[in-house]
Image (tube, rainbow, N blue to C red; front, side):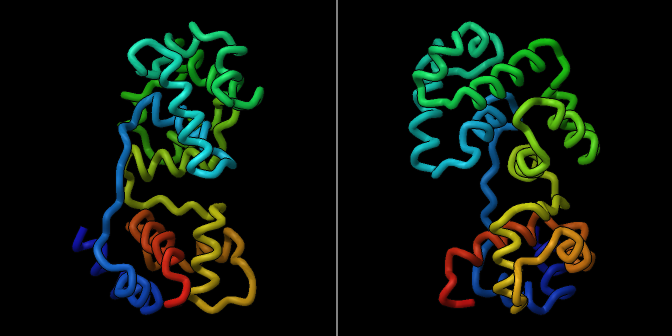
Amino acid sequence: MRKAILHLKKSDPVLASVIGRVGAYKMQYRDPGFETLVRSIVYQQLSGRVAKVIFDRLAAAVPGGKLTPAAILKLTPARMRKCGLSKQKTAYIRDLARKTARGKVDFDALRTLPDQAVIECLTEVKGIGVWTAHMFLMFALERPDVLPTGDLGIRSAIRKAYGLADLPHPKQIEELAVSWRPYCSVASWYLWRSLENPAEL
């Protein structure tokens, strides 16, 4: 990780300043499995507090609290809705469970696939878009060079750190990040963390 941070500091003075303010790199990873993707779907467009309550209810609804494709498919949609899931998210999670059970989504295989192939596989599931696939690549598969150009937090952090008048577009972010490669995931983590101390920016 030291190599990545040295590279980013050297290649981008603005990012070097962000790194200096944020401090030590502490990315927290999740298991690269089915339950992590279910969690991602539950958390979409909800506050963390509300999403946690719903996720915990869903886990409590299955034997042993272990979310597996088989356990999800044994629940009725109505029972899942009672946990607080919307009709759409219930459908998304069930689609993921079916595709995983049939081997269309193979979590062991995902570990060995290139980033783009992982994105293509995961976005075949209803309700999983590129953003969710990017988060899975970064926080579950621990890929070092993921750039979530559509993430509002990343766009906001870049606007503040680089003194831009407007939120940058994905193409602008790609151009800016050329010097960050092959450590865009690390740069992204620092940009997210920089928003936690807005007064310092």
